[in-house]
Figure 1 (tube, rainbow, N blue to C red):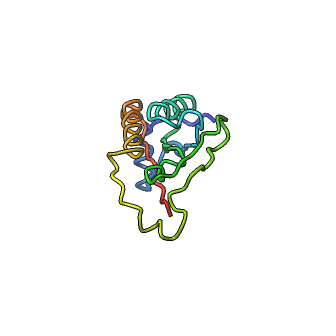
Figure 2 (figure 1 turned 30 degrees about the vertical axis):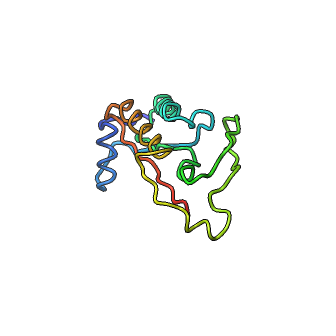
Figure 3 (figure 1 turned 60 degrees about the horizontal axis):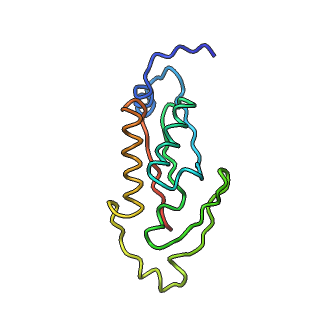
Amino acid sequence: MGEKVTMSKMERIKAALAGEPVDLVPISFWGHNYLKEWTPQGLAEAMLEFQQKYDWDYMKVNPRASYFVEDWGCKFQPSGDPYMSPTSIDYAVKSTQDWARLEVLDPPKGVLAEHLYALQLISEGLRGEVPFVQTVFSPL
């Protein structure tokens, strides 16, 4: 304890990424909010509350774990428990032939668009003061 903070979060992250000296080692932590992550507003609210509470150096946006396959028709049932992941109730690929039926998704539509909107809300909430990134999962 007692380290002197001389850099903003943006300065610290940029310096760390460039391999330059930093005043403090940048730190962050992330996890799901299984109750709030089902809407863009809920996801943004959960992420911003977590950032405000712990004052991380950067935010790794943690989208709901199912978002990347939902637009192909996969269905999930929220658990209702803040610490328990949703249950898969239907899959888009049930046979090898189903792979050929999967179409390229259009990010500005459907669930992907919802997450783009959540990122917009998060960006507005962070006001350019905290760097953030979102994981893009692979469906494979």
